[in-house]
Each structure stands twice: as C-alpha cells, then as structure tokens.
Image 1: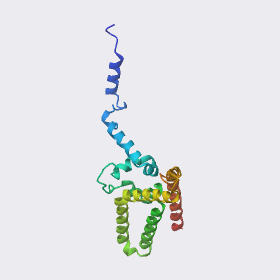
Image 2: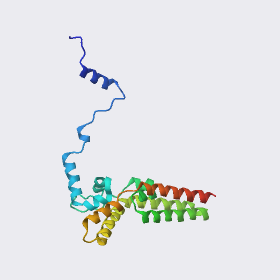
Image 3: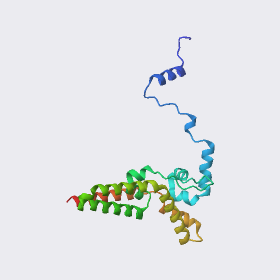
Image 4: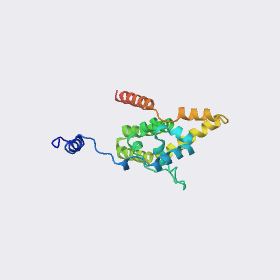
Length: 194
C-alpha cells in the first residue's frame, strides 16, 4: 500500500514539469470587495452615464475620476485614440468628431499631394492633430456622453424610462460604424489611386 502514488502529488509534479499548464491565479488579481462596491456605487450614482458608455463604464469611470470628490479632469492619455483615431471615434459613436478629424486628414493629404515641398510640415501638423486627439479623447468622450444625456432629457422631459432607453440606444459602441468607415476610406483610397 505504501508503494501507491498519491494523485495530488502527481498533479503537483505535472504542473511543475509541464510548461503548458495554466499558471496559478493569485487572489490579488481578482477585484476586491471594495472595488466591486465602488463599481456598483458609481453605476447607481451615474445610471444614465453608465447606459451611455455601456460595457466599459467602470474603465471610463476611473479615467474620468468619477469616484473622487475633487472633480478632476479626465485622465488625458488614450492609446486607442492615437492608433485608431477616426475608427475609435466611429466606434464610440462620435460621428461628427470622426468626420471633422477625417476632413482635417483629407486636407493634410491634399496639401502633401499638391505642395510636396510642404510635406514635412503637413506630416508634423497631422502628428500634432493625432496627439491632440489622444490627449483629449477621454474628456471628449465624457463631453459626448454628457451631451447625449442632456439632449435626451430635453427631448423627453417627463419620461425617465424613455430617456434611459434612448441613451442606451444612442450610446455605447458601434462595430458597424467602424466597418462602414473602413469601406468608405477604402473606396476613397481606390478612387484616389485611379
């Protein structure tokens, strides 16, 4: 009986020698009870804003410092806005901002095509525009959500359920807008190359 192996010891040996075994999860990786309570509290204090942002409300609530009493401005840097500029704006349903940013990029591209001696200046201007969007993206998105909520509250003043439904419908994200943006930009590139 003493020659039998213990299955628990076998699993420990397998995990140590198997490079494909899943790593042990630390309890510190999980959200604490306080973090969960903060998330629920923020959702209760800002229900319309939570509906406007949708799935990533907790992430944006931290970026906007909603849980803090001092009312600081939003954290200024947003990587997706730097790398995906127009597509990030479309994804977040900020269609006018996306159109404006695309228009500025189109103008800069026209300057590069028509005045090649100003190519470096035009590229620097485009880089500055991308950095400005990246630095103001969180604040811009907060302004967009606040404006969306205010517009729906003015439109349906005594209908809170309707306001919530409209904020949810008009807020959130849109993968279709990104796909349509890619199609339109692709078509413009094909036409410009022809």
